[in-house]
Length: 55
Length: 191
Picture 1 (tube, rainbow over the protein chains, first blue to last red):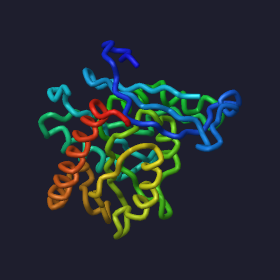
Picture 2 (cartoon, helix red, strand yellow):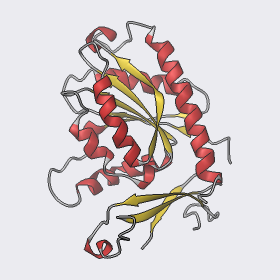
Picture 3 (tube, chains in turn orange, yellow):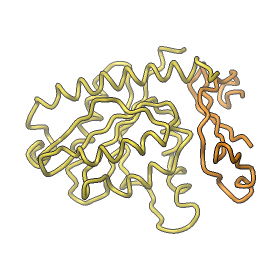
Picture 4 (cartoon, chains in turn cyan, orange):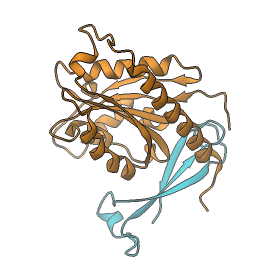
Protein backbone atom coordinates (compact mmCIF):
# COMPACT_ATOMS: atom_id res chain seq x y z
CA UNK A 1 0.00 0.00 0.00
CA UNK A 2 1.45 3.38 -1.01
CA UNK A 3 1.38 6.38 1.32
CA UNK A 4 -1.30 8.86 0.19
CA UNK A 5 0.95 11.73 1.29
CA UNK A 6 4.46 10.89 0.03
CA UNK A 7 4.06 7.73 -2.08
CA UNK A 8 6.40 5.63 0.08
CA UNK A 9 5.53 1.95 0.59
CA UNK A 10 3.68 1.68 3.91
CA UNK A 11 4.27 -0.86 6.66
CA UNK A 12 1.33 -3.14 7.54
CA UNK A 13 1.59 -3.49 11.32
CA UNK A 14 -1.82 -4.73 12.42
CA UNK A 15 -4.91 -6.63 11.45
CA UNK A 16 -7.88 -5.63 13.60
CA UNK A 17 -11.11 -7.59 13.69
CA UNK A 18 -14.00 -5.14 13.23
CA UNK A 19 -17.75 -5.19 12.90
CA UNK A 20 -19.17 -5.08 9.37
CA UNK A 21 -20.15 -1.52 8.42
CA UNK A 22 -23.20 -2.42 6.34
CA UNK A 23 -25.31 -5.30 5.06
CA UNK A 24 -23.05 -5.79 2.05
CA UNK A 25 -19.99 -6.21 4.26
CA UNK A 26 -21.92 -8.46 6.63
CA UNK A 27 -22.17 -11.00 3.83
CA UNK A 28 -18.38 -11.14 3.71
CA UNK A 29 -17.85 -11.94 7.39
CA UNK A 30 -15.51 -14.87 7.83
CA UNK A 31 -17.41 -17.14 10.25
CA UNK A 32 -14.16 -18.45 11.70
CA UNK A 33 -13.11 -14.95 12.72
CA UNK A 34 -16.51 -13.36 13.30
CA UNK A 35 -15.88 -10.03 11.63
CA UNK A 36 -14.08 -8.06 8.95
CA UNK A 37 -10.31 -7.62 9.06
CA UNK A 38 -9.06 -4.04 8.84
CA UNK A 39 -5.35 -3.77 8.09
CA UNK A 40 -3.51 -0.80 9.62
CA UNK A 41 -0.60 0.64 7.63
CA UNK A 42 1.87 3.39 8.55
CA UNK A 43 4.32 5.24 6.34
CA UNK A 44 7.94 4.90 7.52
CA UNK A 45 8.82 8.16 5.77
CA UNK A 46 6.21 10.62 7.03
CA UNK A 47 4.23 8.65 9.63
CA UNK A 48 0.88 8.89 7.88
CA UNK A 49 -1.56 6.16 8.84
CA UNK A 50 -4.08 4.49 6.57
CA UNK A 51 -6.05 1.27 6.46
CA UNK A 52 -7.79 -1.14 4.18
CA UNK A 53 -10.61 -3.53 4.87
CA UNK A 54 -10.33 -7.08 3.63
CA UNK A 55 -13.08 -9.30 2.45
CA UNK B 1 12.37 6.31 10.98
CA UNK B 2 12.40 10.09 10.91
CA UNK B 3 13.36 10.70 14.54
CA UNK B 4 13.37 14.46 13.93
CA UNK B 5 9.60 14.44 13.63
CA UNK B 6 8.14 15.52 16.97
CA UNK B 7 5.75 13.22 18.76
CA UNK B 8 2.20 14.55 18.69
CA UNK B 9 0.34 13.89 21.94
CA UNK B 10 -3.07 15.57 22.08
CA UNK B 11 -4.96 15.90 25.35
CA UNK B 12 -8.67 15.08 25.24
CA UNK B 13 -10.85 16.81 27.79
CA UNK B 14 -13.55 14.20 28.25
CA UNK B 15 -16.47 16.06 29.77
CA UNK B 16 -18.90 18.72 28.61
CA UNK B 17 -20.31 19.74 31.99
CA UNK B 18 -20.40 23.39 32.97
CA UNK B 19 -17.98 24.26 35.74
CA UNK B 20 -15.92 21.15 35.09
CA UNK B 21 -12.72 21.05 37.11
CA UNK B 22 -11.30 18.56 34.62
CA UNK B 23 -10.64 21.54 32.34
CA UNK B 24 -7.92 22.67 34.73
CA UNK B 25 -6.43 19.18 34.70
CA UNK B 26 -6.45 19.04 30.89
CA UNK B 27 -4.79 22.45 30.65
CA UNK B 28 -2.14 21.35 33.13
CA UNK B 29 -1.39 18.21 31.13
CA UNK B 30 -1.14 20.13 27.85
CA UNK B 31 1.13 22.66 29.53
CA UNK B 32 3.41 19.93 30.90
CA UNK B 33 3.60 18.15 27.54
CA UNK B 34 4.33 21.45 25.81
CA UNK B 35 7.35 22.07 28.05
CA UNK B 36 9.12 18.95 26.83
CA UNK B 37 11.35 19.12 23.76
CA UNK B 38 10.35 16.96 20.85
CA UNK B 39 6.68 16.89 21.81
CA UNK B 40 3.72 18.72 20.33
CA UNK B 41 0.27 18.80 21.82
CA UNK B 42 -3.18 20.25 21.45
CA UNK B 43 -6.07 20.36 23.88
CA UNK B 44 -9.19 18.82 22.34
CA UNK B 45 -12.30 19.79 24.29
CA UNK B 46 -15.15 17.40 23.49
CA UNK B 47 -17.59 20.18 24.36
CA UNK B 48 -16.50 21.82 21.12
CA UNK B 49 -17.46 18.84 18.99
CA UNK B 50 -20.87 18.35 17.36
CA UNK B 51 -23.01 15.80 19.16
CA UNK B 52 -26.06 14.97 17.03
CA UNK B 53 -28.23 12.58 19.01
CA UNK B 54 -29.62 10.77 16.00
CA UNK B 55 -28.71 10.12 12.39
CA UNK B 56 -26.34 7.61 10.94
CA UNK B 57 -23.71 10.27 10.52
CA UNK B 58 -23.35 11.11 14.22
CA UNK B 59 -19.74 9.92 14.23
CA UNK B 60 -19.03 11.43 10.82
CA UNK B 61 -19.95 14.84 12.21
CA UNK B 62 -17.24 14.43 14.84
CA UNK B 63 -14.69 13.03 12.40
CA UNK B 64 -15.16 15.94 10.02
CA UNK B 65 -14.20 18.53 12.63
CA UNK B 66 -10.61 17.38 12.20
CA UNK B 67 -10.81 14.99 15.15
CA UNK B 68 -10.04 11.95 12.98
CA UNK B 69 -7.09 13.72 11.36
CA UNK B 70 -5.71 14.60 14.76
CA UNK B 71 -6.06 11.01 15.96
CA UNK B 72 -4.38 9.83 12.76
CA UNK B 73 -1.47 12.19 13.36
CA UNK B 74 -1.22 11.38 17.09
CA UNK B 75 1.51 9.13 18.46
CA UNK B 76 -0.17 8.98 21.85
CA UNK B 77 -3.25 10.38 23.53
CA UNK B 78 -3.87 11.69 27.03
CA UNK B 79 -7.45 11.26 28.19
CA UNK B 80 -8.66 13.46 31.02
CA UNK B 81 -11.77 11.91 32.46
CA UNK B 82 -13.88 12.72 35.48
CA UNK B 83 -15.61 9.88 37.26
CA UNK B 84 -19.39 9.82 36.85
CA UNK B 85 -21.15 7.13 38.90
CA UNK B 86 -18.08 4.89 38.99
CA UNK B 87 -17.46 5.22 35.26
CA UNK B 88 -16.43 7.73 32.62
CA UNK B 89 -18.69 10.21 30.75
CA UNK B 90 -20.88 8.70 28.05
CA UNK B 91 -20.11 11.57 25.70
CA UNK B 92 -16.40 10.76 25.94
CA UNK B 93 -17.20 7.21 24.77
CA UNK B 94 -19.31 8.62 21.95
CA UNK B 95 -16.42 10.78 20.74
CA UNK B 96 -13.84 8.00 21.05
CA UNK B 97 -16.09 5.63 19.10
CA UNK B 98 -16.00 7.94 16.08
CA UNK B 99 -12.54 6.59 15.19
CA UNK B 100 -10.88 3.19 15.16
CA UNK B 101 -8.11 2.68 12.60
CA UNK B 102 -6.60 5.99 13.72
CA UNK B 103 -5.82 4.58 17.19
CA UNK B 104 -4.19 1.29 16.32
CA UNK B 105 -0.83 0.69 18.03
CA UNK B 106 -0.73 4.10 19.71
CA UNK B 107 -0.15 4.83 23.38
CA UNK B 108 -2.74 6.17 25.79
CA UNK B 109 -2.44 7.54 29.30
CA UNK B 110 -5.42 8.38 31.49
CA UNK B 111 -5.86 11.20 33.97
CA UNK B 112 -8.66 10.50 36.43
CA UNK B 113 -10.44 13.38 38.15
CA UNK B 114 -12.84 13.22 41.07
CA UNK B 115 -14.34 15.39 43.77
CA UNK B 116 -13.91 12.48 46.17
CA UNK B 117 -10.84 10.68 47.46
CA UNK B 118 -10.28 8.05 44.75
CA UNK B 119 -8.94 10.20 41.93
CA UNK B 120 -11.16 8.77 39.23
CA UNK B 121 -9.73 5.27 39.63
CA UNK B 122 -13.06 3.54 39.03
CA UNK B 123 -13.62 5.51 35.86
CA UNK B 124 -10.12 4.61 34.71
CA UNK B 125 -10.73 0.93 35.39
CA UNK B 126 -13.77 1.09 33.11
CA UNK B 127 -11.87 2.95 30.40
CA UNK B 128 -9.00 0.45 30.21
CA UNK B 129 -10.91 -2.35 28.39
CA UNK B 130 -12.36 0.22 25.98
CA UNK B 131 -8.84 1.38 25.14
CA UNK B 132 -7.84 -2.20 24.39
CA UNK B 133 -10.69 -2.71 21.94
CA UNK B 134 -9.92 0.58 20.21
CA UNK B 135 -6.38 -0.66 19.56
CA UNK B 136 -4.75 1.80 21.94
CA UNK B 137 -1.98 0.61 24.27
CA UNK B 138 -2.42 1.52 27.93
CA UNK B 139 0.53 2.64 30.00
CA UNK B 140 0.79 1.56 33.63
CA UNK B 141 1.00 5.08 35.08
CA UNK B 142 -2.14 7.11 35.72
CA UNK B 143 -2.54 10.60 37.13
CA UNK B 144 -5.19 10.66 39.86
CA UNK B 145 -6.53 14.04 40.88
CA UNK B 146 -8.52 13.44 44.06
CA UNK B 147 -10.54 16.18 45.76
CA UNK B 148 -9.96 18.17 42.61
CA UNK B 149 -11.69 21.22 44.08
CA UNK B 150 -8.67 21.50 46.39
CA UNK B 151 -6.02 20.82 43.75
CA UNK B 152 -6.47 24.00 41.70
CA UNK B 153 -7.28 27.56 42.69
CA UNK B 154 -10.16 29.39 41.01
CA UNK B 155 -7.91 30.52 38.16
CA UNK B 156 -6.85 26.94 37.46
CA UNK B 157 -3.39 27.23 38.99
CA UNK B 158 -2.06 24.06 40.56
CA UNK B 159 -1.90 24.50 44.33
CA UNK B 160 -0.08 21.27 45.18
CA UNK B 161 3.11 20.99 43.15
CA UNK B 162 3.74 17.44 44.32
CA UNK B 163 1.46 16.36 41.47
CA UNK B 164 4.15 17.45 39.01
CA UNK B 165 6.41 14.59 40.04
CA UNK B 166 3.75 12.03 39.24
CA UNK B 167 2.91 13.76 35.97
CA UNK B 168 6.60 13.60 35.06
CA UNK B 169 6.67 9.81 35.60
CA UNK B 170 3.43 9.44 33.66
CA UNK B 171 4.75 11.44 30.70
CA UNK B 172 8.12 9.66 30.63
CA UNK B 173 6.35 6.31 30.37
CA UNK B 174 3.90 7.66 27.78
CA UNK B 175 6.68 9.09 25.61
CA UNK B 176 8.68 5.87 25.78
CA UNK B 177 5.64 3.89 24.71
CA UNK B 178 4.80 6.41 21.97
CA UNK B 179 8.34 6.28 20.55
CA UNK B 180 8.44 2.49 20.68
CA UNK B 181 5.05 2.11 19.05
CA UNK B 182 5.89 4.66 16.37
CA UNK B 183 9.00 2.65 15.51
CA UNK B 184 6.91 -0.51 15.40
CA UNK B 185 4.16 1.00 13.26
CA UNK B 186 6.64 2.33 10.77
CA UNK B 187 9.19 -0.48 10.66
CA UNK B 188 8.01 -3.81 12.00
CA UNK B 189 5.72 -5.69 9.62
CA UNK B 190 2.98 -7.99 10.78
CA UNK B 191 4.27 -11.49 10.04
